[in-house]
Length: 317
Image 1 (cartoon, helix red, strand yellow):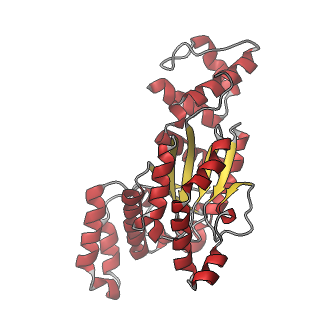
Image 2 (cartoon, rainbow, N blue to C red; image 1 turned 30 degrees about the vertical axis):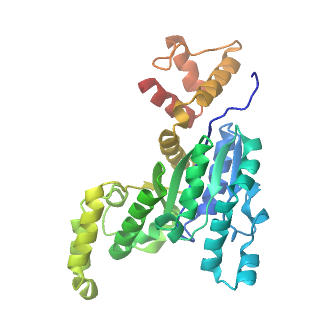
């Protein structure tokens, strides 16, 4: 049907520990995406979120409130949050009814910061799994505060948590070191930043820990944890400064590649619309393998930097 909304939708499930910057990320990323011309819908799945800084298209607080749950069931904040997620899992029809009118938007899901929801509790994973059945292609964007890099022991813990999250959530995954603009305030790093983002030879961290009298007694345990991380060889990070457009662009490129947005027909149509406006006539790509030579200069001139890189990725297929 002409003019029908596309059936396939794309989005990001923003997860991470409390205080890692998930809500700030959703605000910054939504503004960046709108500047690129994408229609964005931010969905708050955290019933503990109050005073949201972004325009919220769907708010789980309309379905269940953390305060009400804590009062009615005499639960603490952790137990109450788990109950809220289980309640949402049992009422996914409500969520689908809210999301269906937003087809054609790019979704940002602001998720709760409860770590166990992403490491071993099944509610959030079940919600994500159901959304994929609704033809919603998600990438899990896992934020970790960059200050953990300043402490080798904490960094090993972060690596273990990130690995457990990747295996449990079962979505295409992008790990971010957030608040990179503040890392200088946390203290001097023992190694170069690339060492932490690429998760290079972790034996150096073990040697660094051995200099601490406390951790010297747990060297064998740390060796086994490091071996587990290196055996899977899955964890790496992208540094993120939410105030820096180039940093956001780098993250978006990784996310779009992970969920397939950059290879979809929506991206091709948006590029064709931009090219048609630039040329003053209808424009169509003859092939994604290699655009017409005469249009290459126009693409570089009129496409935003992130869209240029997306098109270059498509040309390489």
